[in-house]
Image 1 (cartoon, rainbow, N blue to C red):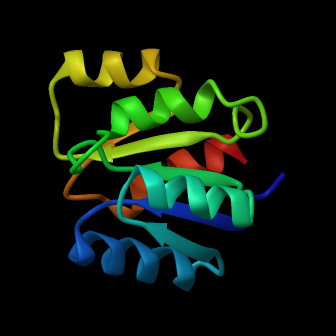
Image 2 (image 1 turned 120 degrees about the vertical axis):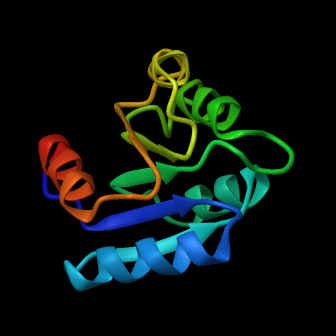
Length: 121
């Protein structure tokens, strides 16, 4: 199934604008959330085909939110790609253990991001 609707969870307006622009240029519909509460609100409004998840956010971090989404039956099937500046191998392993399907480090390379999205689709 091609990925058309994407939810970006990131507390950085700059990152949100950058990723939204990137995805919209590829014809995708993008919605955003700046934290855990807003992310669950967006999920209840419309289930996306993919979630791009930042890690460092106020309140629940991206690892915790990824785990929460994966433990919620109606959202467990939504693939999550963690997009973060945390580039240690231990972070990558931990993110995947929380249920993420992939992991990409910032600054985001558009070609790498789209290759990972295509691999899911």
